[in-house]
Structures are given as structure tokens and as C-alpha cells.
Image (cartoon, rainbow, N blue to C red; front, side):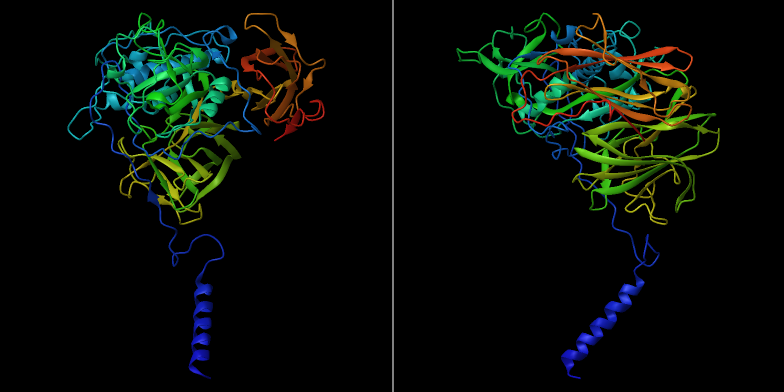
Amino acid sequence: MNPRSQARVAALILACILLSLVPTSGWSQELAPPSLGEAPRLALQAEGFPPGTGFRPPPMDLSHLTGLPLPGEEAPLQLPAVWDWRTQGGGRVTPVKNQGACGSCYAFAAVANFESKLMMDGASAQDFSENNAKECNWRELNNYQYPIGVPWGSCDGGNYQMLVTLFSARGTVTEACDPYVASDVACNSSCPPQATLRDWRIISGNAMPATNTLKQYIYTYGPIYTAMYVDPNQGFNSSYDGSWTFNYAGPGTSTNHAVLIVGWSNALPPVPGGSGPADGWIVKNSWGSNWGANGYFYITYGAANIGLYSSYSHGWQPYDAGGNLLYYDDDGWTTSWGCASPTAWGLTRFIPPSATYATHIEFWTTDSQTTADVYLYDNFDGRSPSTLLASALGNGFQGAGYHSVALNPPVPLTAGNDVVAVVKFTNSSFNYPIAGDVNGPIQSGGYTYMSCSGASGSWIDMSTRSPRTDVAIRVRTSNLPTAVTLSRFEAIPQADAILLEWESAAELDTLGYHLYRAEELTGPRRRLNDLLIPAQAPGTSGGASYRWLDQEVRPGETYDYWLEEVDMAGRSSLHGPVPATVSARPRLIPIRRRPAPQPEWAFRR
């Protein structure tokens, strides 16, 4: 055998030996799992702000969040030339407030967004406390410092993201209970919470979304929280009276002020030096109603970096006095981890302090599109979770942010008996799919883990990593789980129709449903279905998903929808209203009309 042939044989033998060492499933002790790494983080903004501003970006590099178009859109909607949520649907914007000299714009814009979300969902107008938001968040309560040695006070700036834990773990309180003070004061923890956040979605990070994309989000979901760069030298100061439209460039991706975009118009006052009408955003500020155009200002699309760090409240619930949220990520999402792949697994282990029911698994996602497979286990020995209690697979999320997945039926928990929440995250492209917190006190070993594969023996205790990190996966509990009978009710605009979708969490005694529509929130309701829509899982603890296509609508109109649940004793409960607005004109390209809803409106999960 010549030397070349001998070398080939030796290489073949070596390859066979190496292949024999590769396990057929999972990871063995002999083969190390893929490397788990942390995404780069940004240096927090340390310099001061112009008076009456105060937006600080979060520490993660979110430049990959550029504003994904709405799901299910074959083509952009032909949006109207003018749209203003102050007047649409009877008005879905609360009155303008004044932050004063305190750098608390982040609290005003976030609270205004949450207030508008309640109105979008048909709830009555609320006046929530910005003071409670700025004083009772984790950073303020725990004397967070940046840079080290420099305390970060409530008037020293912030962002919506740092308020999400306060809004989700506890909730908002009323202005009457905790009135605003334009300085750093103590947290008033005695006010009863009113509404709790369950879903918050990011449209864009430190990147500018397309104007039409941002318009579609505003048109569909209501007023949007966003950041911009205030420059007093460009007239963004006390002299502005609303008689012109701002049109100046912001430096790089710099931002220093948080505001609420409520609409747009192609007939705004002219830009400085111009004569014709301007085309741009209508924006709610927090400098009082005597400033600008009754507290609002106008700005051309993309000027002053407006549109960066856009986000919105997407889901909420009335405060549950018998509920709780189990979590370790005290400051929420402050870092991201991954395995050089869009897929990774996270695990948190909790010990419930009292007997209760697990109703939801909640977590943060880090990419514009993520699929989450959720599991709840009874045990975890450090190598593998065991005894599956519940699961909810294939949950898709449009937009990074904070999300909630219902457990149907709720799972009973025993005081002192640990429970383990596991989520498999699959991002569309971002290779750091697991959110974590490095700011709060890190939980001791044995409670938060990450894995590149989810296989036995692959779990890494994040209290041993550098930086030590708490995995951002949570368990929501309630002492009244039977009250959670409906997990979702949405009205989704189509080309020339409204698609109604709802999901029941349990149908133990449900007989069926009725759908109602009104053209005014307080106007008469018309029932859409002639016959009762029968429940698909009556007498069971399971649920079902339903669809109904309402085609008897007019372009450009806003409608409110209600869902009535009827039980086997003839009693009923009403859910809603949820608003939806039909496109002002058909899509740019035709779409195939869905068939009549009767054959397909329900399918069992």
C-alpha cells in the first residue's frame, strides 16, 4: 500500500472512532454542549437632559428591532391621510399632564400609553399615577447607581422597560391616591392597584422603523410610546405654540425624551421656513396643556429621531387581589444570552409561599418574532425537569417584549412544594433568545438555569456564570382560577372586514357564545350570529379557539365588539368591548375572501 493510501485508511479509521463517541440524543459527559454567551450591552447614558425630558435607553443593543410589519399583511394597508386617536372611536387618549422640571417623561409616556390601551379595550378612562411609576419601580426603591457611586433618582431619567416589572408584578394606581410631585420623593406603597400589565411589545429599538409600519401599529393598536431627541436650539422649548411643525435632524441615534404618538396628518402647520402644509406625526407631550397646541406638537416623520424605542401595551387584566407573580428578574430584561443559535432554553424553579393555582407563564422575548414552547414541571434535580404538569406549545409572538401564556386548566400548587417553569425560545434570527436580569440581587444556586438543547445534563446554573444572571421567566398565580374562563378576545382588521378571534381557557359549564357589534361605544349593539355559537368543549376543563369574520362593515369606520358567554343554566357574562377599525381603502393588492364563518369558526385545541 502506498503512503497516500495508508493516510486515507488512517483518516477513515479515526473518523469512525470519533463518530462512535457522538451520542444519539442529548449531550454526554464526553461531549461539551455549545457555548452559552451573553449579548453585547450598551453603556447607559450618564449625561444630563434638557429640562422636562429624561428618556434613557435600556442597556441592551436593540438595533436588530427595526419595526417588523404587522403579521398577516400581504400588502401595506392604504392608510388614511389623517388619523387622530383623540377623536377616533369617541377618543382614546387621556388629558395632557405636566412633568415639570423632573426628568420623568418616561413615566408620563408609559402611563399615557397604558391609559389609552384600557380605552382601546373599551374600559372607562383612567387617571393613573405617574408619581407611583417613577418612585415605586425597582431601580428607585433599591438605590440603583450608574455609574457606580452615582445614585439614579426618579427624576434622573428612565424608560418604559424599567416600569414593566412594576406594572406586571403589582399594577398601576390612581393619581388621586398618589398625586404627582415634580421631585424625587418616597414611594407610596399603600395605594390599591387597579390594572396589571400582562403583555408589552417593542416595535423598534435604537433603529428607525419605516413610517408606514409605525402608522400601521398606531392604526391597529392605538397610541404608541416612542422616544426622540429634544433640541431647545431648534425651538423645542417653552416658546413653541403649535403654529409650526418641527423638522430638524437628531444626532446619530441619540434620544432624550419619551412621548406618545396619537396619529398623523398631511395637513399640519408648515415647517420653519415653509409655506405649505406639512406631513407628519401628532404627538402628546407632558409639558402641560398650555404648551404647544393644547399640550401637543407636530413633527415630520423621522425628524429628531422620533420613532426610536417605540412600544405599546398589548395585554392587561384587572388587579387580582388573590393573585401573585413569582419571579427573580427584579429589574426585568437587562441582558440577553444565547448559544450562537436562535434557539435556547430557560428554566426557573419557584417555591410557592401558599397554596394557589398557576394560571400563566410569563417571560420576555428578545427578537421581532419568537416562538415559545411553555412547560410546567413538578421537579428538577439539576440535570433534568420531571413530572410534567402542563404545557402550551407553539406560542408565536410578534415583537420583542413581555408576554403571558395561559395554562389551561390552571395548575394547583402546594405551599412549600417547588414548581419548575421551562420555556424553549426560538427566535427568527437573533442568536440571544433568553432574557435575563443582571441588576437585581441574583438568586442563589439551584433556581435559574439556561440550556442550549434542553437535554438532560445540559442545564447551566446562571448563578455560577459571569455576569451572574437571573433568568426572566415567571409564574403568575391566582386563588380564583375558575374566573379565568376566557384567555383571549381580539378584533383584527382585514382588507374590508373584521376578523373576531377568541379562546376559552375552560368550558366546564359553557353552553355557547353570542357576538355583538356597535358603531359607537355607548350606542346600540347588534347581534351578529342568528343562532348560538355552541361551545366545543362543554363539560370539560379544556378550551377551544373560535373565529368569526364580520364583513358587514364600512371602510374607515371604527367598531366595538362584545362577546357574550352563556352557561348551561342560562346565565351570561359579557367580555369586551374590543375596538377595530376597517381600512379606509382596500389593500394595494386583492386578497382572497375567507369563506363564510359557519364551517370554520371553531376548532378544538
